[in-house]
Length: 412
Image (cartoon, rainbow, N blue to C red):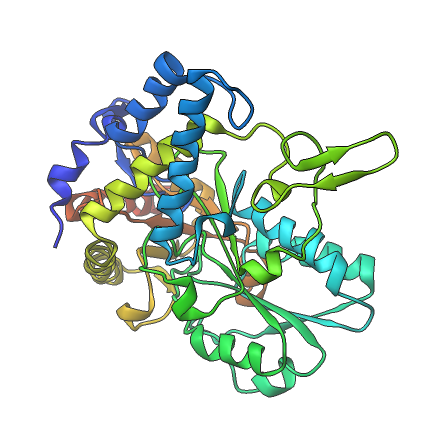
């Protein structure tokens, strides 16, 4: 097991205050905090290594290019990809999914074809497919969820059939922390000739993932949820699929030859990476991955399971708390969604903020789930490697204050 107390000292923001109170950060599902190693890498780049990549013959450009491409290699190793050229840099998971929808989708989805999602998806894995379906006249089907937020696969043979062209599913829910059993879904998709996209925004940072062992066709995730900078996303794709995908954006760095009447495109990965990327962010991302590797993703997952168990026990001991998500702790990550009965989630979040406790409130970009549950939103506490049981104790004490404040309001 990891030592969260020691790890916390690597994160400068966690040594600061919020609203005059020691910061208790419980919103890593939205974006994780950054250790010194990542911050220092960003600082060093702009102080000592700043230059554009892939184009210059001078030392700084070559050095920046080397560092940038070293991250691509590190990512390919981290997720078990066959080679580095199948790692495409984007701005975030959202852009990675849009890239697949707009490049592969426009080329392969036609009228009457079926796109399969689940009712528990983030908007980033719903809206791009809706846009494509409207443009192409395709149909979207949804795998329903059970009341505990697990997937209901009872009618999976009717949902995924010969008309299905792609199945896109989140690895772990950002709302309930549910970790889906995706291997049967991948096998089912491939059995009817469909591709499978795995949204790893919440998975890559918490769960050991080998894309070749899973046999996913696409894997999308973001640096900012796994200790890295914002503005850096990753799309993995099988080489034979990426090779056939036309560019989504045109411009510099993605071309082979340009004339006034036509252009030819570069080989992978450049063909799908138009323009100057977030160079410093990509370089710093390697340090984030190395940090995660040193701690160990399995250690991180088990730490989060222990925190989640403790949080659920403490929350369950409070009267008037509604919890969401599966009961099996091995099927959920470090996310706990709840509501305080009779209190709007935004009010809960505002009172906790006054105590220096940062949680996320609202619909979490998962409005279909909220509508299914017949609620406006939830309070969400999410944990990472730097969180401790004391953070959860602070959350519970804050919720006791919420209940006390609103009890006084009711009495009035």
